[in-house]
Length: 389
Figure 1 (tube, rainbow, N blue to C red):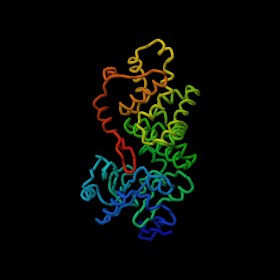
Figure 2: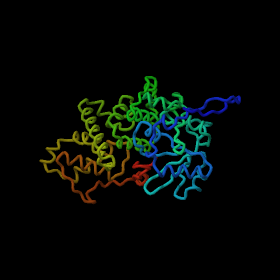
Figure 3: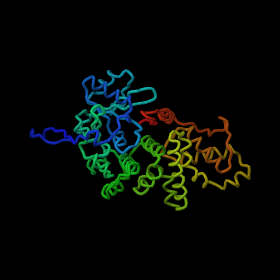
Figure 4: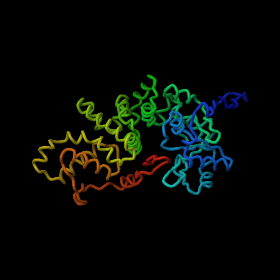
């Protein structure tokens, strides 16, 4: 075990970070995306520092296959852009760079300062950048050249102990960004890291902060859940922590109202887990079926509707509208919701073969069209679907 030293405000030499070598962290070099390694090497050739950071390091340590490889560096976005012709600067407030290799997108960010808290935009040092990370298990920096993990906050020990511990003080972490509550329950479910009672109580007490989050960000988080093979565990935890009512208020209301609906709903989500394990790249509409099928089943007496020879187009139009409202504030791509509604209706014995003219007449507003276009999936690194972040 090695150590990284620095000086305190009085100029005294102090231990800053623990450095884990290959024999200690056991990350196989073959598991590093070669394009991510190329980005780091090119940044270093230009005399910049660069590391793999965040969830990729966590996943490499616990033996999971990373969905993406985020990179952090001391190079500014404009400098990164000059080094990589296959890149683009994104973001207005928080600028970073996407480096593109074919269908893969790598997010390259600059070390951030804590002068404006954990959501400021000033550039800083690695010592400051680590203090902006949400939880210790996401605050590790991996040097794939030296094959070393740099740990400023005890994240390696927390991973080994299966503990979820925040880096940012609990009186600030969720106020500065309420979405961190959703990330906390996701990390707890996917890494089996236990939340302390105090952290859980803080999440429950702060749950109403999610009401301030935009529908686009809530949609993004809901899509991540639907694409996760631990979706049922995440949703169960979200219900316990009073968070799911902000992601899916209609479903939550029905769950609170009826134990029978809750059982059916959670059984359906467990089936989604199985789909994600067997077919992780299945289309979104196929996954959304598990969100809406129990709701659709409860809408009417479908046997009576079929026997009564109700108009298929009318049934579809009404059901589509009901389901559109049911999944709010989530705003999925229209064709994916259409796919899910048709599949749910077919499960009730209603065969759907609609022409364009038979589709619901209400057209999405201009903002919805722009959002749907922005949410067309892009692959970020190894198979990650990027509705945007």
